[in-house]
Image (cartoon, rainbow, N blue to C red; front, side):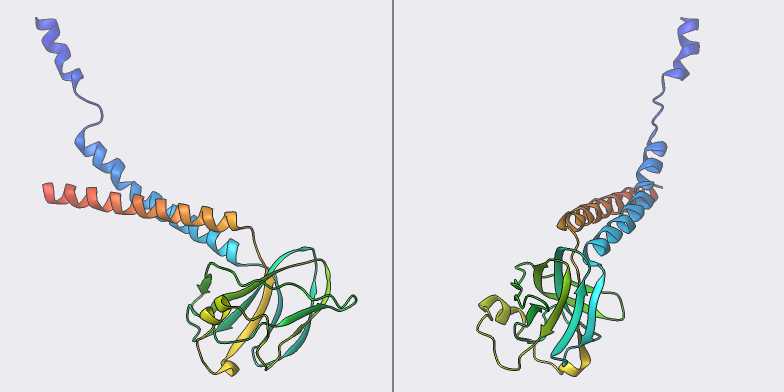
Length: 202
């Protein structure tokens, strides 16, 4: 009985409530780290090599596609909202062959804001490597779709906006980044809740 009594103090649970709360509090810095990584993945999915950057009022320009792949046309402006400024479907031709590229209006709205400029993706297209010409007519294009008209019915002074054509990154970066941000939010909220419970308990 004496021997058993001496061993009894060693039967306590190693993971005491205090240690548990400390581990849960560590979810906050882990969540912040995941949030930073998630934002990097999202920026990587949206960012890409800029092939053309010009005033929106400019109706004719040339640019070079360095490699075959997917590209996108973005509107850029300091006062740009999530809804794009009204514009018609431009024409993009291959300089040598004269072939016109097929522009698509993306179903999912994608917009970014770096603090200086807001950007909204308005068209996507696939192009082989080569030199191309961008042309925008002042008259409505027959290819203007109902989705485009719905997305670009925001009227504004186009002299304050720009057009960017840049490389599109795989969508997996965006999906993975969003999942990481959601996980980071769970970690941060859980860590704060248990920390507040610990403070309230004392």
